[in-house]
Image 1 (tube, rainbow over the protein chains, first blue to last red):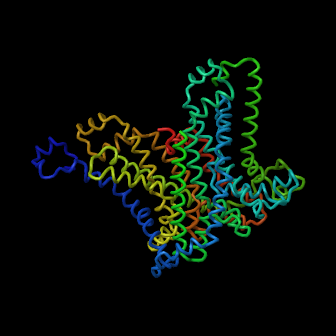
Image 2: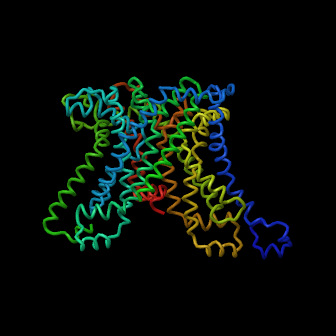
Image 3: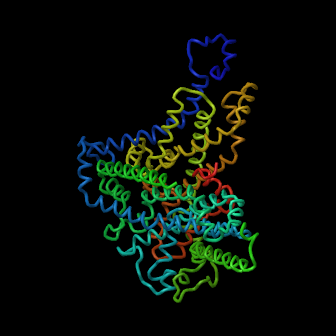
Length: 302
Length: 282
């Protein structure tokens, strides 16, 4: 453990200070970093490079094929199936991002004014969020079952919610909102608790109550949380896969096939890993672009 | 809260109505969970009875017994428990070690390396599925616990949160330990780990819930029913049981039970965990 020696100790043990000016702690730091660093390089950095490399080849899922340059990307630009999947992903984001943000805010405002039943109400809204995706999908497949489900029993409707092009995506979006909104409520609740009572009391003396108090105090002070929620939400919407895959499999007639589902189908069904890697790289670029644009827009507002 | 203290008499009525409405909406929101439990306690005939029967006339655990004795559910529980625990322990250990180095030690290239790690947060895991599958395939880990676990133990966010916490520990504490002759491993284990109880729990619980609920990676890396985890296995049961709704809901209830219990028991820690990891609370 000589590397942890203090400078005084180094002098005593005769290690000349001038030979190396390496800061103390170097080797021990490397040892401590090594496990994470190795895992990071192996399971993160290496796959990034590999995804780019594969996207320039004509490869199967397990064997690397010939280098084809940008051919996959050229094909991607003219691929109407790809653009349809981008559109479906965008549609899903449109159906979810704003509702899940607004609803989360409303829930937080409602729960925040409770005193005794507060933890109870918070748990009711938050519980769906901790469930695995497949529990959520089983629940809603049962409730929306067109012959025996709860919605059928209560309303008499026989709509196959996940099986018709007009209703499939909105229904997947609805299920997602139910599942995830509790998380946003939690973030907004934390934001509301950071607003001090004195601010409201001072504002009340100036006549700011009810809507005015919300509009001029709560809303501006919650803006940082709102931007966080919007950012997290938009990115997670673009990464949509599991719910769609389980509930509709991308159908009916590919009407809900999102980008990741298209990538999955291409790689693991058609076994075309080269082209699927081009989709993966495009997917990453879309996420990067959207987060940069969003960051710029949100910074402009605040 | 604030408003209640200064409320006029008329506001009290409105307050009661708003409270009632909030609770009613909350119950409605959570009702699908209750509906699953109620269905699971029915017989198959009762579950599909027309007109609808809200409550099971004679609650029965037949559906639960059936799904626990026939099929792979117990095995999926074991798989999920083992892999989630391993992922949680490895993630916390790797991140704590790396964060200590970044926070307390001086070494060349520290800042650049830290920013490289942070940049990793930008790359979505989903974009790496194909190369990761190929890598795990080349390593011979498809359909193994190692295959499920290894790609899930890299968490730059956990390093970031740990480092943020370690940075706030007063310098004197480490200096005192150094003077006492403790080496870095000992300082980390005997001083920093005990100090970081809250953040340790926060990262641990969030990692565990995420690992238990992860669908996409186990979906890619497992093909045999015996190696599936709970979220993945549950997607198989509907095909297996066909129109057995009570059984299907019994599997759903059992599949969600561990995380629901974890939440109800550790509500405060779960809440703090998610807030800490998203950076809303430090």
